[in-house]
Image (tube, rainbow, N blue to C red):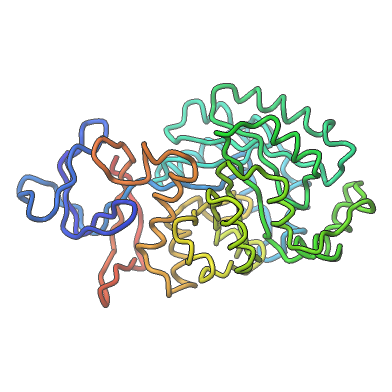
Length: 390
């Protein structure tokens, strides 16, 4: 296929009036500037062409919970709803997983970092056109003495994923004891990519700073006591950094309450730290967003996720981009597209395959219409939508 467009985003920057030659399987053969091709020999796609999106955070197994929960309840109430309502007939769960996987594919997503608490998604992933990295999520409600008891089922689940790409990953600082962190570290390796929910709500930092906030009461509802827990006097991310390996790629998820000092320390601690933002889920659950101005100083370390259908209206990276740009207009489309493409690929060590439009790569190609230039800035129109080309 020979195609050209008004704008081609290569994963890091825009090229105007450029063209591509593709092999039958979607491999990039040539990337041509305006003076290197004859438009009569190429098919025109008005708007913007870019690499496939990387969805850095999802819970595919919760797809059957679409539309089940109220918005704006806050994280603790939301977590309680997920725990109490996630169980249903298996055929409903299976059908929702298949539908969500197809929806993400249709929305131009080529790779997904997926949280896995169960084996429900395995049949879908084995045949999916999307590349999944599976985070076997571990938690023990900060019960140090019971960490092995909790970890054994996670080991069994890990084995069920067989050849699928996977790692053990801690759920969040507030739900993983030091003993469980140690077991996770011992059973991963240097190539393991690790995901952890981080500072999604103020109560999380309050628990670690002075043992206040709502988590102690929340845990008691499930029969777990925090009487033994000792506050650290620091925000929760410092506890995570003390117990996570500093050599692995680490994905910090949500980060709604992170401040500048937290971000800077995470980068100093591990240059392979990535901050995954899920704006629509943040609005759905907490009705707030991270301070993107702080994160934008670390342009190469930001990725985008959709989270799950339990806390979102769509599984679309383009919809997440629209939300970010609507509420944070100081950011440029070029910046945020890098988060969705190149940065995501780097976070999952997939940059040799996808994330950028380069010769001999097969990154997937998306086409977005309703794009315009205003004051030398490329912008999305109100009707911008994504179509998968390759």
